[in-house]
Image 1: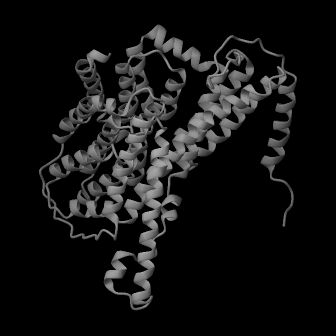
Image 2: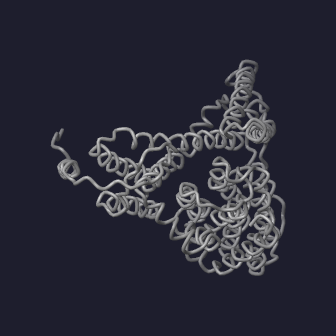
Image 3: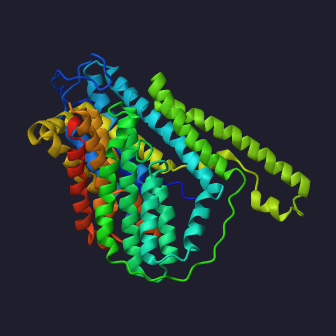
Length: 489
């Protein structure tokens, strides 16, 4: 066995060693009177013009370029941003240590870690519910009903879009898009034009539907958890979100024929307890909202309480499946027992199937953006956008940026900057960040996922052909919001 160190290790080790020595010799920068993100009275050092700040910015940009190229590099998006987060905070901590300050950098990190922990546990609970419903065949049964319906292509176009719009507010837009796209691909087999337009319609509908609910998108969840918008106030975005989908959908529907394909014969049986799990998920949402509205507890407490109820019900399902096996025997099990279970139910398998790459990506993004905020870059961006450009223009620009850069770091940056805005403006940036990603196929998780699911059919350029219609819907939805919600603008 060859024990020689790999070439990359021979290169990286001295490189990082030299970097450490160089940072140890750097001159102490001047202190700036700047507030701390953690809310204490510590004075942050303005590093925006210092080489450390510039290096941190370059590291983040390079990491995000790798994220954007995920489809071509086949490198999970969490890996570069997690590494970037560690390097950025190492640079920051070294500067503060030189100043004799050993607490500020650590306190800033703990502040951002708390925000991440609330977001991660909330999403873990929601993902577990979604995965359990998937395991109980809830989504497969919905898909089977649609592909067996015998509807025309245009009817399927409208049904899948409508379902995507109304399912995404309670489920995440990624799961919703994957389920509806499976229907479009199955029904329109061999019809590339229909599959392309159907996938675009689903992406727009799923993103629009997620914009008027705290449970529909990560950005709306962050705004709710931060307390910028109350739960019931999100529904002021219902009509603008609906318009955002309907305008491009009506234009794209003109390209869909009324052809009636042969109905596919597909039947799926919902496993035992499937509909109960759906009811428990809705009850968990009610618990979460109640805990937050009436007792002012963080939303994550309600979600984790609901998850505990699901885990207890999972124990009941597991015991019942074991009882079925004892009655019928492992070899002579009845058809009913096989249909109900197939294998012993285990709630932790649903937790294992959570999108851990996504959860770790959020960690990297929150720590990276938080680090850039500590350096001072977010204050500069906030002044340029919300003071010099204007609040409304800045919030519209956020949506355009979210089509190029993922909406999660963009929205987290806005929340970290915390500009002085009215409720109407917070709703506007929530809307634009949620639906702006529809402008490009790479602008949202739903679009990226469908490019993989309908590979070679739904592509970046096929989506780009309809970007003009999506941009029209984007502009009209903003105008509708400013018109019907003018009293809170």
